[in-house]
Image (cartoon, rainbow, N blue to C red):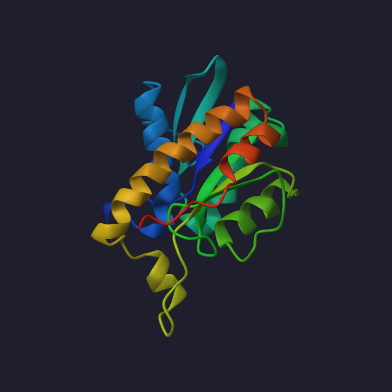
Length: 192
């Protein structure tokens, strides 16, 4: 069984913010594969189903971003999921809006949600999909930026990225993470 976790913050206050792109991708997967992600357990909203022949549990941690590891750890322990069967989807300010980057492992890169997951799993060895939300403007507080919403011009690009990240997650399970990386880690061309 695979665990696909999209990171974000619960409550309407944070809905559609840059920090909640992981939740958005889970919603795309849930809709496409008809998986109900409403069961409250493991400090998360969870839904079990099948994606491209693979059993999955979709997870939206409800612990708030900086404590995401508590929820991920609870799911991993309950279902006996190995690190290579975890896919974490989250925002990345070092990537242009809509750009994807798949990684098989690595440090938190300053992302507190990932930092907490690494601390709770005791490992950096889990696959992840980073969804670019763009760099923060100069003199703007980072927390204010990641908790801001996308502008009208960015939203279309981000909606496409959410669908692409959902496809990437499915590809990681069916084709393997290496092949998915080769396909999805390409630099997007800016539209003229």
